Length: 197
Image (cartoon, rainbow, N blue to C red; front, side):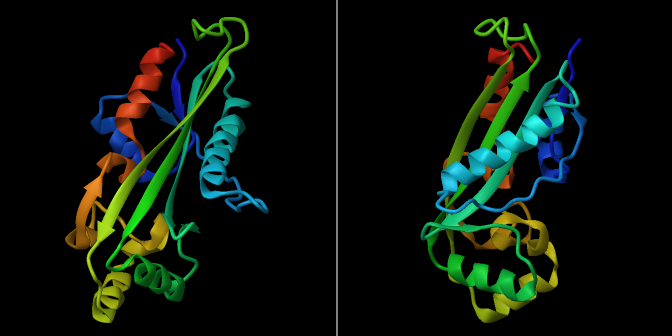
């Protein structure tokens, strides 16, 4: 029976799938995450999820492969993972006292004959989820003390909604788990539709 392969090393995505009772194995990828010239945020995040999925699917063509990418967007700017502490501080100042969007793109690829809709060619199913997040006003002391925890350093937008930063999240509109890194309900629907779960 085909397995579900998660094309990600993210401990948060792995935890979300485990918590939802979805069995998987992990095959991380190392795709350069750099926007192309003229590429808008939604195009960029969709391409990243697709490239991660295909890189792993080529090595696991008899399995279902799930790839995902999450970005934070403010004023049309993509906030990825901070390069260093000064970059994290810059991002947190941008987010302070305002609303921003978090988009996660997911791509599910499956083996030949796995999908009723495309029984001869296999499939690639690409979708995304966007959540609006409002951050309270942050003082410089808030920013410095938060960076000192090291929590922002491996997260898009330099914050983790499920961690210390939760104290400053005053409102979300949409899927909470999407902000953590994976829109679980959307992924579950995709898996069910393609008989991967």
